[in-house]
Image 1 (cartoon, helix red, strand yellow):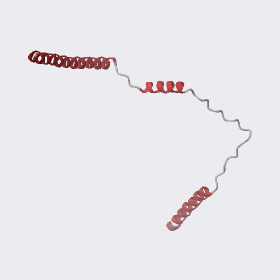
Image 2 (image 1 turned 60 degrees about the horizontal axis):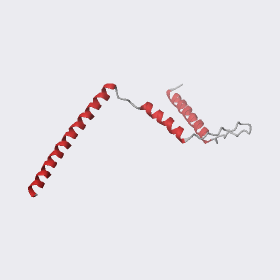
Image 3 (image 1 turned 90 degrees about the vertical axis):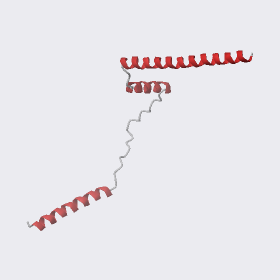
Image 4 (image 1 turned 90 degrees about the horizontal axis):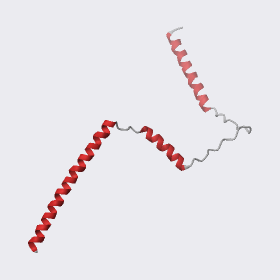
Amino acid sequence: MSEMDKDFTEQELELEAMAAQSAEEAAPKKVKAEKSDKKPRKEKKKVNPVVRWIKELRAELKKVMWPTRKQTINNTAIVIACCAVVGAFIWVFDLAAVNVFGALLRLFN
């Protein structure tokens, strides 16, 4: 076969493959006939919303990345220190306010 014949044969094969493919796509699709002897579908049992919520809760809690003991202790110490600092500021400003108002009352009495 000459080079030209080979090219022509390859082109014919490609065209035939494309024609077969388009014929398959154009052919009407067969719909399965429903059998009357089929078993009836099981109806989905309604799940109690509370039970469903608990199941979803458990699934979500499994996804949680819990802190290590060291991280928990560190974070707890930070929170306690911040509370102490804020408490000290409140105490100082309260003490200052009491002294300022006491001095004003003594001054105008």
